[in-house]
Amino acid sequence: MAKKTVLAIGIDPSFVDYGAFPGLTVELVGSYIETQIERLRTLGFEAQSCLIDLGDTAEAVAATALRSRKFDCVVIGAGLREPPERLHLFEKIINLVHVFAPEARICFNTTPADTAEAVLRWVEP
Image 1 (cartoon, rainbow, N blue to C red):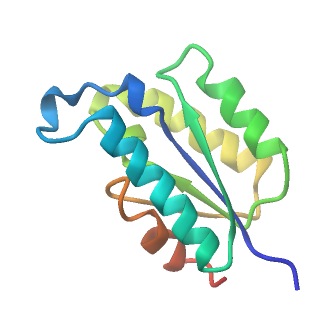
Image 2: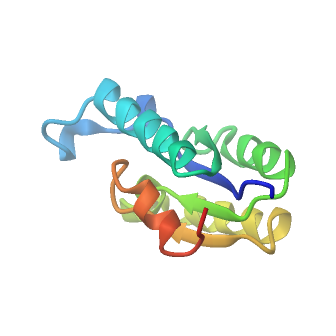
């Protein structure tokens, strides 16, 4: 039986303004992302991360990842939903998921440390 596939789309940690997030760093957020992808793999999923910038190439990078295979679940990172000025980028990414992965479950993490929990709400390994 084939493993269920997961794509996690989020903002590349190097583009985040950490002023609003005391204690977080590029390295720490990157580590959370890597740990969650590895956790999904340990749970039995084929998981990959798609880190995007704040707009210049975000759509192209996300579209390429979404076209790379059929996904059972697409996780949209919290950094795409907040702050409010990212709403337009968030909408663009959601619409790309709708076009390129219409059968995938869509879920949302609340931090880079709870991606696996978001996936498990919608898809079993």
